[in-house]
Structure formats: C-alpha cells, structure tokens
Length: 105
Image 1 (tube, rainbow, N blue to C red):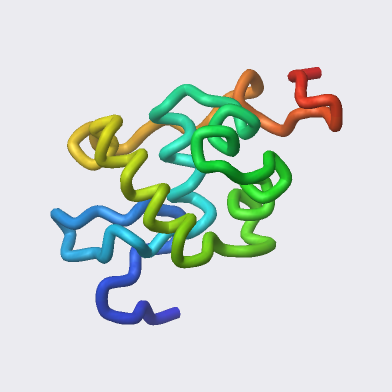
Image 2 (cartoon, rainbow, N blue to C red):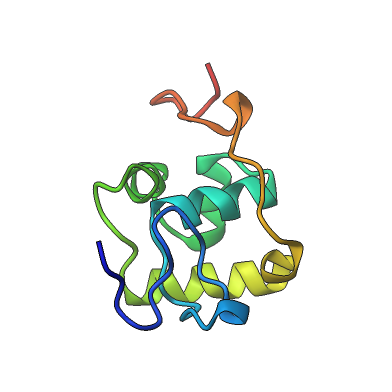
C-alpha cells in the first residue's frame, strides 16, 4: 500500500523529522502517544476533551481523529516531548481497554 506525501507509515505516530505531517495520526500513533504519556484511554480522553470510547475507536482503527482532535494530539505530543523521545512501548494491560464504569478491570 502506498502512502500519500506527508502521511505517517502505518502504525506510527507522525514524526516531522521523517518529513511526516504532525497532524497525520493513525491508530498506532495514538496508541504510541498514550504509551509515552503512560495514560489510560480515559486520561488521554480527558486531556483532549473527548470520550474514552472515541480514543478506543482511534486506537482500533474504527475511526480517525478529526481536524481539531489531530491538532490537540499534536499539542499534547509536543508538550510531552513525544517527538524527541523516539518510539514508545505499546500500552500495556494497565493502559488498555477500560470497563464502562471508567475503571481498569
């Protein structure tokens, strides 16, 4: 599968050092950012002003972040040093899917 110019490789967060648009967020990029932040889906959703279910949908590829959410993801990434930190480990069980009540199972 070919990529559009400025589009992040599948499963990666946008990295401007690679000539990739900082707003090109895919499922793996959102997961990587959340892993870098060591945040749960609920915590990242609160930081972005969205729902935990929305973050889950981004991470599973059901949907992609829209324009304002991509900008907020970029700001959070820049603020946290995500672009300078290199690849982050995948989110573990402690940062994975959460129950409907919002607490980890």
